[in-house]
Image (cartoon, rainbow, N blue to C red; front, side, top):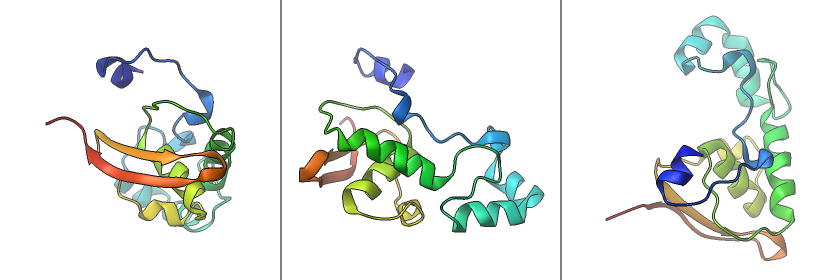
Length: 129
């Protein structure tokens, strides 16, 4: 919400657009998790339905974001990279593991059309001058 407000938007949280629940991995560095739980991390990165951290699986995030998009919302959304990847995957018909290949730049915009029209206008457009 702080980022949206800093951009001058009146922020309203939308539960469907929250970043994935990382369970017990929340707040830990990737390298730390890889060192402590390599097999669990491998499963999470290779099995769409896996949630070995006790949080949300990539498939669950994709389903949640996709369901929201199917209602053909209109407006501006400020959200985390994982949600943007899930939205791109939904619009392009990609599975949740393929979307991890998208690099989403900080403070960039992604424009897409939801609902039946499903189109991607741009990704990683820089904000500001």
